[in-house]
Amino acid sequence: MKAIDPNDRNYASISPSAKALLLMKGFTNIPFARQAAEIMTAPEKFVPDFDKESFIFCFRVAHMELRYLSIDQLLSDLPLKNIIELCSGFSFRGLAMVMQHDVHYIDTDLPEVIEKKNETMSGLQHGLSEQKGKLELLPLNALDEKSFTEVVNRFPEGPVAIVNEGLLMYLGLKEKEQVCAIIHKILAQRGGYWITADIYIKMPPPPEAFKIDDDFQKFLDEQRIDDNKFDSFEAAEAFFKGCGFAVDKEAEIDYKNASALPYVIKKMPAEFQRPTGQPPKIQATWRLKIAEG
Image (cartoon, rainbow, N blue to C red):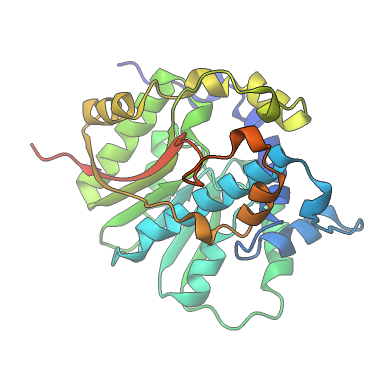
């Protein structure tokens, strides 16, 4: 397969979603999210108030919060000290990790995001205690094998954990295959795992209560997010199997951990309340490993 040149597409068009997602996460208990949102929106005040927001906004926030926590869950039982996050946006998981653990964490995204993130990071680190680990923020396009390899080579010897949330749904099939090939080669050389929260499946058109015509939805439509989702979870597993991976573990969703959930329940239209109290499964977070043989 001929490699896709990462310069052939303007991936910077994806970057605006990073700020929108941060402002959503600023409503939650995700580490540093609210402080980062306050810095990002200054001099205006960032005052999160779920009561002023719509049901669909609360639903989105709860989903993003649970997606974030799902990666932490699958990282928690891995004794790995080398972690690289792809397309991290304005997520500060790396800062939270190095404050608590002796790990080398490399946080990556496109150059314009990393530049703004470095400015925000300075404000977040003010007054914090000494870090236990090492944190680096570096620009990286995940489809650029040479740059990807150079960044990974900054780690000392040993296996790596590659994590991402919010990457694959922006990529077409060939781009997904290229990212998989790069990650497979790295894990084959170093050992380790790939944790991705990007297992989204196509769903029927949403009911009216779930429809929203805002800037974020327009962005999703422009990026053809629905087209880039997998047809089913079985199709997703078959795709990764074809790329040389096996599912090692799936994150278990614990809805009680979502600080936004009470507001979702409060605002949920009666016709969509389910006896189980759980929404239909539209996404999964998988820990992948190199398939045997």
